[in-house]
Length: 64
Image (cartoon, rainbow, N blue to C red; front, side):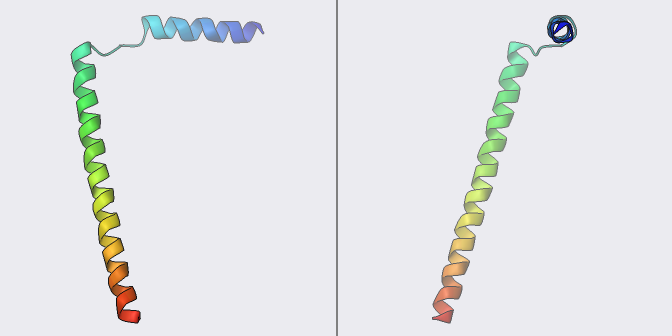
């Protein structure tokens, strides 16, 4: 049990003294970058889904 307490204490010390937290402006900028990347990935997946649906409909219409 002492090892667990030491682990918690060292983790807390590292989070407080060794981690460099982003500023509010950096946080906003990276959030915008993530949201834009998410929107692009969503559009790509939507386009792939739409294209594959239409290709399969075309093939099924050809086959009967």
